[in-house]
Amino acid sequence: MRFVIGLERHADFQVVTYNNPDRIIVELPDIKMQLPLVAGDKPVGLIKSFRNGQTAPGQSRVVIETTGPVIVEKAVIERGADSKSHRLVIDIAAAVPGGVKSAAASTPQAKAMRAG
Image 1 (tube, rainbow, N blue to C red):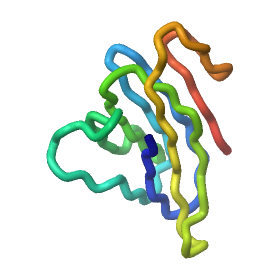
Image 2 (image 1 turned 180 degrees about the vertical axis):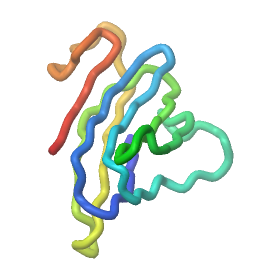
Image 3 (image 1 turned 60 degrees about the vertical axis):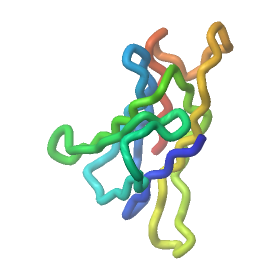
Image 4 (image 1 turned 180 degrees about the horizontal axis):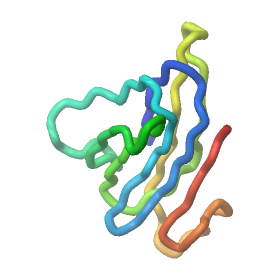
């Protein structure tokens, strides 16, 4: 499953997954962003809900609530079709119990990806 955040420009980011509750946290600088449009309040695929806000001066966070444990297979910034805008593309998959752990795992409960 893919989750895409539109960005006004290229930016450094950090993506971390957590369990209990299952969610993905995306840390970004305080920039203009566009989250996906959703209709209704029912889960779509692995995504239960999402929200964003400013966590401190100059810092923003997107919280993606998931329907169960997930792994982030890839998180990259891509240039938009207009060559001016950018988008953060996050590829998400359901975690397999007892599966291979990511090399980026920092604790048993959290796995992080950074870009810069």
